[in-house]
Length: 101
Image (cartoon, rainbow, N blue to C red; front, top):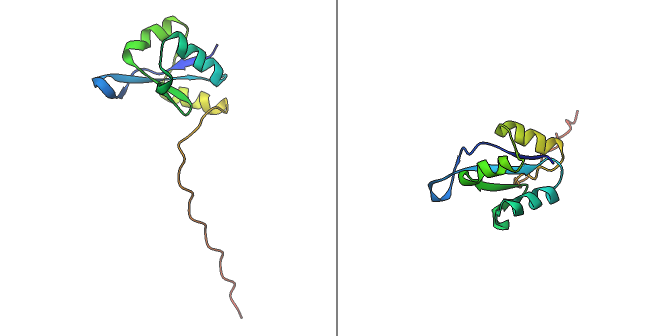
């Protein structure tokens, strides 16, 4: 199991700090772990669960590996499981007009 969690550093609803919970193995592993934690499905966002600070210690007790946020994202990318927000495509670069001589 490779479920990872970063420290609760992100301000969020209800005045709590929030963590990101991910798997660097599969989404199935992540969803199963979230069910054990009683984290609602609505907390899933593209490739991670947002979990409140009140869940952090229990997640670690159940086997989530505490890692810094940067490592969490790096391992998610390396596993090919990162799903970034869609960004608008950059406008095409115009072809240079050949000079006529």
